[in-house]
Length: 126
Image (tube, rainbow, N blue to C red; front, side, top):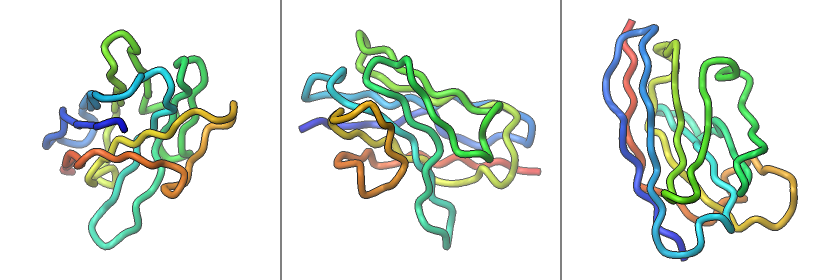
């Protein structure tokens, strides 16, 4: 199986930027689609962005389009989430997730992903 460790979270003011990283170990990283999810206090975990095994295909939830960028470096077995123009409503614990690539479709539901990191806290103050 694959193990995932997130880093890069922190506290920023609204309008600021953060870059999250998720380092993967274990299995062949390029066999996996990767995604970022987030969970705010009292809310369900929600999808943020996903990237295909090759890095060529990405999808985003509407609320982060144009502000966040997901990318991956298969040589470094790492996936990134660049977050710009942060808003207080982006405050959440951010989770990295992985699933074995089975189709060209990128999935956006939590149940599609088998492997999860421990999460990293992002706090955006107004």
